[in-house]
Length: 144
Image (cartoon, rainbow, N blue to C red; front, side, top):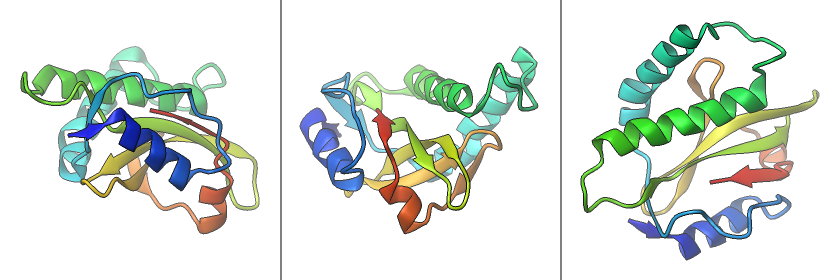
């Protein structure tokens, strides 16, 4: 488990130029497990998008909407299976950044392990993605 103060400090360290909410919403967080994300969560999210009729990109459900939906799906899926003594929330959030050579984009970030290593997820796949140093430096919004 990781407390809210550690989350806030880590987000400031990772994204010093980003606007973040004044405080994480929960007191304690569970680091994400990439194998759970790529297994159970990606499948659950795909089924949700199919059920909602959102299997393709739409102007009414673009990248910021998809990253928000993925974040909510991750929290719901994790919360349904969390043990009573687990943390209050999962280390999942969303960011907005400038894609190298292009415009602004929103994706998801999960903090993994006690070291809180960021792992990036493109919710339009969903799939894991890598951000360049300049893309990480361009992050202007983060919510967790």
